[in-house]
Length: 299
Image (cartoon, rainbow, N blue to C red; front, side, top):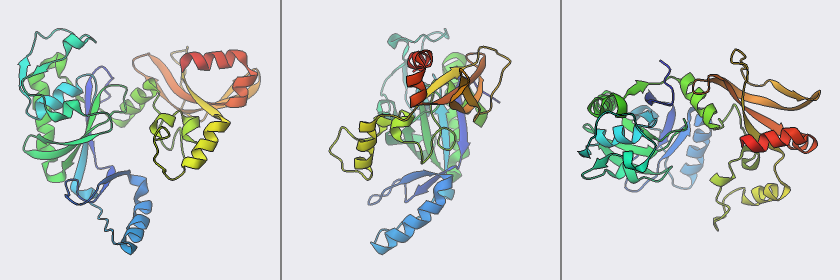
């Protein structure tokens, strides 16, 4: 069933590929999309030549995503945190005073975004990442395959303990996730961005380490692109007609000229209309003052 961003959502899949053991003392783990398996085979061959051994352990792990405004509390309770004080089941408020207090806060609560930590959930030792894709707080939990049902039940039990307001764990399908990530304005690989879209055009320059001294592969090329400015830019589009619908890849026409295209679209349950991401040509923004003003406002 589709869950809106007002509820926490849980989904499980084995769509990530994990190389090496997640808890190896002398190794490293990589989490890759399913479609990168071909690239992984090439990495295995390269690694063998320099004494690095890569093992595909995808089938040994499953991934559970807990995302939504209640994700923090559900994961905390599921990992054994004792609540110091749980107030009445009143609607949550977006204030610091509404955060639950724990007698001994688990390490997962202090994780910076994109970081990992081990956590015991139920009877399983899991690898937990502070990660979200739906516009709310969230965690991705990597679980040994044979313990997936037990961890699922522990998360559900934590939700029951927290009650219908602070818990409310719901199952969430792919299209619901797609809807929420578009409301947030998160781009997706393969739909909005690909190898022909630079981090500058995608608005993802913040993910690159240009502020550090790290000489990563492609840094010189990226700095040249940055100096030249973005050739394209993304903006969110919400349809005024609640009955209108798009599917992605539709051209955007302004004053008889194609100025860009929708890259992906879905029904936005929070806004009650179709919401989409649009990629605009930089020259079109320069030529249309009203279009540039719109893009600047929605960004």
